[in-house]
Length: 407
Length: 164
Image 1 (cartoon, rainbow over the protein chains, first blue to last red):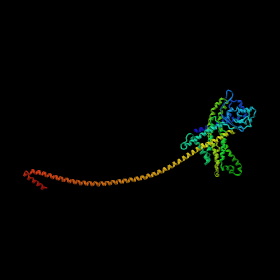
Image 2 (cartoon, each protein chain N blue to C red):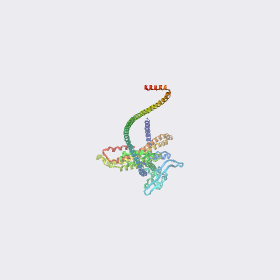
Image 3 (tube, rainbow over the protein chains, first blue to last red):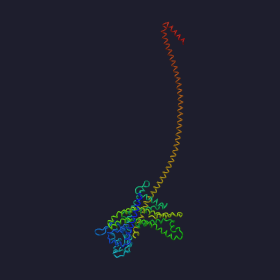
Image 4 (cartoon, one colour):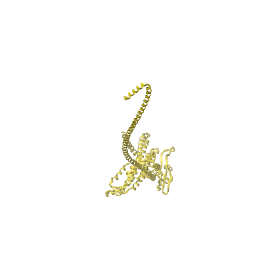
């Protein structure tokens, strides 16, 4: 009875959410599609006007500083509450440069001939008479080399290896992960959990490890599963801890960044490819189909080598990014309505907060689910690749394909 | 578009971080943890097996014990029976012997009693004889002082003797 009621409530919440979200999506589309209009709007409205697009992308994208909030001071200038992060640049011929991101003064100043691309800088370029499509080549938050006059120098190529907020947060998360896991491992070494019952964090981590071993590695990889256990465990906890850190309000969206997921995907790709058996490659280069169809099947099979890890990359990236965007959108709704009228904004806030909390809880779930799915699918793909051929049970090869639909 | 173009810096640092974390955790965390888990699982399996074996042994021992007990009980019964028989035999023997002894004692006692009786009777006879002589003497002394009485007395004595 109660369960039924909760279920129907959830359905209702979902549908209302879907409705409201589709509206926001439409509302957001306009400015993003038309940059001119958006710039014009911004100029007209002044700096006090709420700009959801900037807020959302400022949160989900990488940055060279931890930015908390900005305010307009009594001197009429913009002030920012931030934690500056180290900038590491490499330029062929120039070598490495190392300085703090505060030197850029939020894109207002040039340091050592480098400039941080911001909206203000782009506006300056526009005032300087540069064409829009030319300006749009420079992406926000990227660092470019400039000449003495402050205009971009396209002949110089700068490679940005800065400790951005994603990098810093990822390292903090990984530091915690390594510390946690090694301290747990040391407990096992002393015999706790081996001859006696596991205690503390052991109890939290051990079921996860045994789950990954018994439900992910063993069924997919068969008897040779031990070889892949460290990789699977590392991938799982690597994603999980970054997912969880990304859920902290104001934290960077590490797992929702394609560079992060791409690295994991490439690692998965390399492992899958290098553990491929003769049977696996035979199946790709010489599939058991009539001769004529081979011309179609071989390219498709070769493509599938790349689509599998690519699907992993996009799945994790999209899931985590979407969750973050939804939450920020819901919060932004308050201010969007607040721009119409303060009363509407205040009136809408409880609804917005309720949905944000709801999505937040789902995100906690998704943090675990996506880590699991990535690990599980990696195991499935490795299992498929490493499997030694037995043509009698041909359906077996198809069976592990099913979970690919997940997520 | 910025969303979908991976940044070089983050790619680089993520790769470095992943590799470091992978190798560090592989050596210092996953291997000890997995080995410990395996060891524990093997330990548990072994313990269960041992417990099972011990239980079987226990059952076997119990059966053996019961058999031993049954044998012992039988032996006890036999011993008790034997003891009872010995007891009865001993009692009977003792009884027989006692009877014999008693009879012998009684016989001896009777013989002694008879001998005593005879001795006592002889004694009494002697005493009586003595007393008779004494009394007779005294009587004779008094009676014979008077001849008439003497005669009379002799006559009575004679009569008495005759009557005897």
